[in-house]
Image (cartoon, rainbow, N blue to C red; front, side, top):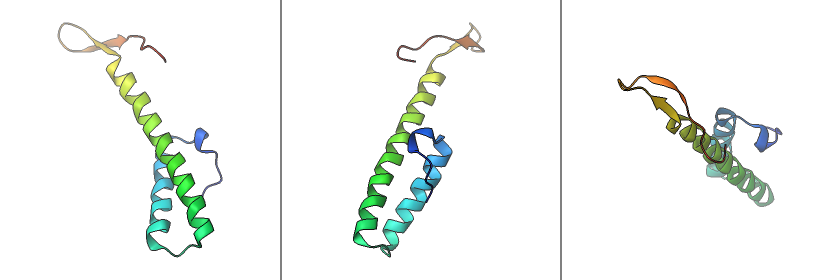
Length: 80
């Protein structure tokens, strides 16, 4: 597993590590204490993925279109 801080991960990095964490937990071949640590890391990774998806959705929602439906720019989204 990566030692990179979850807060610094891109969506893709967090998702890839989350998949590794879930795989390790599903196999059940780790000690109880390690399983607890993996579960906690997995929860943090899931939260990071959710956050990055929300940011992307907000950016997409902020794209402005002209009268013909062509993107012409973006508008500010509250909170960004």
